[in-house]
Structures are given as structure tokens and as C-alpha cells.
Length: 518
Image (cartoon, rainbow, N blue to C red):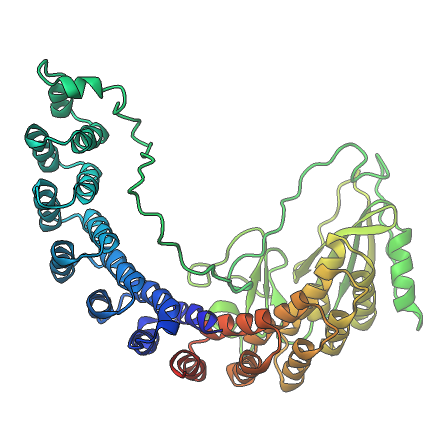
């Protein structure tokens, strides 16, 4: 859990994260060495005023060799004069060959004159170990500077060891250039001629498979993104094979049906199933705060004429992005329009719009319009679809449910999320949209879902994400409790990850507690 807490710090800004990381790195016990190694990487990713000082202190004073090596390695990202001076000192005075290797690598990544000069001096130092000198020569060759090339050509004439000479030839061949080519072709340069085939210059895009290339520094933890902070991908419409969308050719099937009687909800599913292959349309009233442009945009939780990114709530965009700083649109408060693609009585997929108006279909289209139905009937039909159909249509049925007027949907979504017989992907969608239903009751429902021993782990982890979308005063305390006490390690890790995204001082307090207390 401490590693998970460190990953949470990776998501936070330097001002919040570095004080806690310093406390972790101040520890000197052997049990915390793995934790300190991870902390060094996270420090290197923070661009704070203290980053350099922390890495330099660890490189010089940490008792664990691997921790020191990691600090030296990541000093290459700092690249300041102080960092170069420290790396020079480590290179000249260290007795640990692996630490020296890291210092050479770090200097090779810093493209400034002094770092290059330190590597040239070390490569020419006959008292230095040959293996370390070879690595310095290799990294000089990777910098492709005329100064390094001239140095290596001069160094070749002074060397006596064949392996060092081979490394010079290899590095010069990686650099390319007319001067190196002429030098390589000199008649008296017999050893160079013998190695021309081995060290032939590669294409510009190729990189050598060199044993000295650093491979130990990995990337940070994968980032989990806010599903509503980016466009929701939907495949563009395309022309299908003959008969795919046209159950009736050459004539328009346009059935206008009125909703009547108490059995309308039960009849709605039957009417959809009875429709000819093609498109079935239905409309219903949207809840307050929901509006759209009838095409790509659905805005949630609008109030006082403000919607989406520049106001309150969320904006969902389909088939492309929307930037509220660049584009304004007319946001219509409904209705919700659902277009279902039906094949042999089964809903294969559906699309949801808010606002706008239906376009009159072409003469050869197969379209059945069921008109305006009551929100409750629509919700009952769509939830039944989501529960029964393990198809894209079942998964996509959850969104329009959440937009319906005069229906409290979160208890229904919670029931769906708990239903082991429902398709997994629709259960995940139900949990996701539960996270958008602000309120104490919704938060309690999500927390109960996480604690339910009969619910599978994927649904629990989706519920953890949904809690992270709740208002801070509701979601953060719930996530902290889960991170502290939940019996499943994977669920606790998810809670810590999303706490790291919150920038909440209570989350920082938890991370500090987990990372600094014995």
C-alpha cells in the first residue's frame, strides 16, 4: 500500500508532493530501501525548486547503493551546473562501478559543454578502468558533435587496448560525417579498415543495440483518465451492405405511434421488437439541467444559463471534441432523442441526442418513429434492454436513462450494478453513471457497493472511480476509509490512485501517514 501511496503522489503537484517525499527519503532503514528507490523516481518527475537538492543529497548520502544509483541516473534530467559538478565528483571518487556507470550515462544525457569535457577527460584517463572508459566513449559518440569526433580520432592514435580502439571506431561510425569517413579511409589506418564493415554507419533512424544503453529507468505509473474530460468515441456512420439498413427497399416505412394506456411501458419493448429491420426512434422529456445541441453535445447540470466546461457540470461530446473557450452553441433543454438500430427484433446499438429535431428520412430508409413516450416508460424499457442484452445497445442504453425527467434513477442503477446476471459491461456503465449522481444517498450506495462481498472486483473498482467523481466532501472521506480498511488490496490501491488525483489536503495527510510512519 505504501507503493500505491507513492503512485498517488505522482499525480500531485510538486508543492504538495515534495515535502512528503523528503520525509520518505530521510529514512535510513534497509526495509524502506525499495520505497526510497520509487520515491527518487517520483522526485525526478517533479519540477520544483527543491528537486535538484533532494536528488543530490540522496546521491551522496543514502546508505543503499541502488538508491544512490537511481538518484545519479535521474540527475541527468536536471542538467544544471551543480548537477554536472556532483556527477563529476561521483565519477572520479566513487568505488562502486555501477554508480560510476550511472554517472557516465547521466553526463552523456546532458548536452552542455562542461559535461562533454568531463566525459572526454575520463575517456582519456589511462588510470580509469577500461570498461568505464568504453562507456564514456560510447556516450560521446551518441552526442554527434564535431568536438567529440575530433577528440575520438585523436584518442584512437594514443590507445593501446584493442577493445578501446574498437569502441572508438564504433562511436565514430555512429556519428557519420565527411571527416570521420576520410579518417576511416586513411591507408595507414589498418585496424580501422578491418572494422569498417562491423561499424558501418546506420540509417539516421536506427539506434544501436549497445549493452551500455540504460534500460533500467521505467516510465511512471499508468494514468487513469477522467472519462468525461475527453470526447466519448463513437464510430462514424458508414454505408452497410445491401439489405443491412434497408429491410424495405424503395419505400418509406414511417410508423407514427401514440403512447396510450397504463401498459405502455411493457408495450414499448414489444413495439421495438416488432419493428422492421432499420432504425427505431423515440423521444422523451429531459430532466432539469440537461440540454444539448441536437447533434454532438450533451451538457449536464446546467444552471443559470451556464453549462459545461465554462460553467457548472459536465459536457459530453460525441464524434469530436468541444472547447468551450472557442465555440458557443445553442443548448436546448430537451427532449432526449434515442435512435435504435434494430436487427431481427434485437437492438444492436443506439445513439442518444438532446434537443434538435428528427431529420425526415430518405425514401428508401427503414425508419419507425414511436413518437414521444413518457420518461418512466422509456427508463423501464432502456433498463430492461441494458439488463437483457449483452450488446453495444445494452451498454449504450444507460446514458439516456440518466437524462430522463421525473425519475430517480440511481437506486435502479445500483440494483443493476449488483445484478450478477446482467452483462458485465452494462454493470460497469451503471456504476459509472452512479458516480455522476451527486448526493449523500448515491455516495452511500456506491460505498456499500464497494463493501459488498458478493460483488466482483471489477465492479468494486468501478465504484471506487465513481466515488472519485462525487463532490469532495462526500467522495474523499469514503475513498480514505476504503484505502485504510478495505480487505482487498487491489481495491485499496484504486482508492489511493484516485485520492492522488484529488489534490485534497485530507488525501495528502493519508499519504504522509502511510509513507512516514513505521
